[in-house]
Length: 388
Image (cartoon, rainbow, N blue to C red):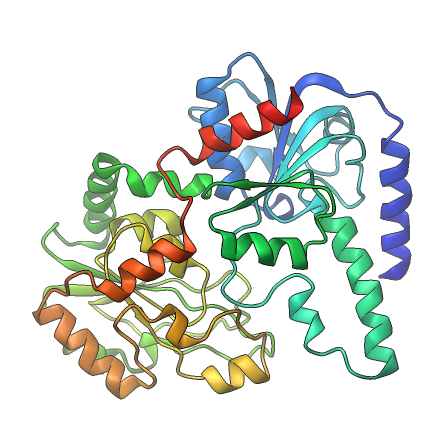
């Protein structure tokens, strides 16, 4: 690991000497694994609003993606010479996970880098996820090495914070130095402000699942456990949950890092949502349930009820990853600590629609202050003004 970090530092220094082509923007996400998330949403805005620039996307398998609407974008295979050449000569690099979005080595030196991350942090991340285990000489040494690696991997010129709360977290965990933190929401969340698109998505997804538009959609988005421990799943007792889902369904989508892959019990009312884009599911749902997923903050935009389900809060906060916020800080009026109370709350929601609570309004105001329907525009203008 240390040798690889040294190699990445060397390639970074070499790339500082290579001239950049003005107006060349290159995008990547999920270490080359996906054409999605904030970089894709930002690219969509840029292609439509600023066609004068040259755009590229680096991905592991360019032939596997739907390129409709992105005909003027060049898709390059991650690890190829053409991708390397495009990255090393780009004026701007846009990423979701860091420099590895573009390749094994770091050839990002000299480019203006925009780091979106892949969510607003609820659980500890970056250096904070490592800092809590810093005890003894060996752990302190590992922390120093980790700090160097994080700084190298996530170094950027621009970061995005949806509130002052997250601005402070970004400054501390990602070692931003002299970087600019833009006050804006995430580009992927712009769809949540588009009421017409949300209606169309809802009809299309419900039709695929075999339901009409009158059914209530409950979205369950659990996060992963560093220990590999399995998360709570509605499929573990599907028959019980089916019994209270009259005119309602549950869509359960696991975190991509969840190591568990077990058999799914057949249910007429509970569905796996991994085939759907997360933001699409957020856009169409009537209620969200999560333990510690950052999607909690995205769902606040919809003004639909959020149910917190921190069933293993003590273990998660003390032994697992840990979280930035207490349950009281994020309480939107509905919290279940075990499946019995969860059962009662879901049954109540199915029978009685829940109004937007004052608690949720306060949480939204504090934690997603800068979210708007024009996140991408705000971000571009901030970058453009800084560059000029």
